[in-house]
Length: 202
Image (tube, rainbow, N blue to C red; front, top):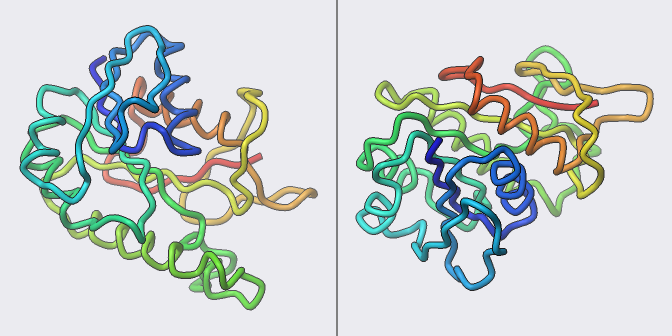
């Protein structure tokens, strides 16, 4: 498939890029600093700014799917959605956050007392992005939330999927960025969550 990845040099983005390349997809790796994009088979680096709707739409045009892996507080969701819509791309997948997942009926993780203040603004912005997608009637979107602990680790290929509730086990709530990338690539190859949010965890 032809896939455009916005934010290809970030923590999550770089793992998704590696996973897609490993599976043989043709990936346009979009970054502000394309020289930082690693040399991988099937990967083409391209410079574009998430805040430039026209420029970003041109960069995304001609792709089967678009993934955005950008910080919510450093980008405008309205502009990203507008650029993807204008590009005519078939699907839009978003690297989401865990903050909007429920830990109890009607209680989101971001609203719990133990949620770190440091990450609160990013988590709230991620929730706003999800709400905007849910109101959009034209895009075929998917929003993938990680578990609470989302850090570099191993690619095991073993994990669980859920919908709107935070996944936990006896060790807490976690997913490696490498296994998150596997779940994202699986969703691209075999769409199972059109116009939905889902989550991945151990």
